[in-house]
Image 1 (cartoon, helix red, strand yellow):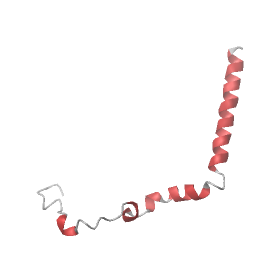
Image 2 (cartoon, rainbow, N blue to C red):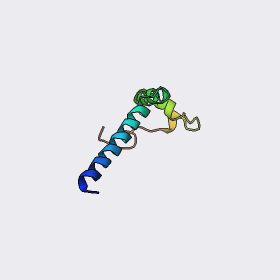
Image 3 (cartoon, helix red, strand yellow):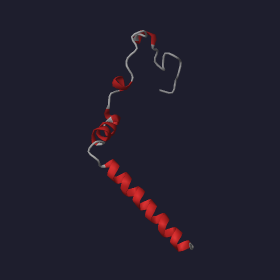
Image 4 (cartoon, helix red, strand yellow):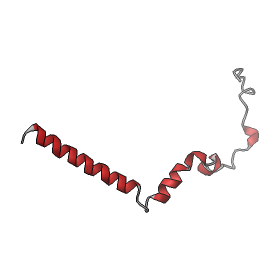
Length: 71
């Protein structure tokens, strides 16, 4: 087997893998998952991290209250 045949077989295998990924990505079964992932940047922070009621807003101090002058 010479180098040209090896390169041809490698190219063919990579092309088959690429076509497989494209078919997987555009399949109808994956559409819901990809749509959900596409909307993640627009999700509210409270939906991603449930609020912990043990800590009230009174316990949280601002940067200015802690002495940070870089506001």
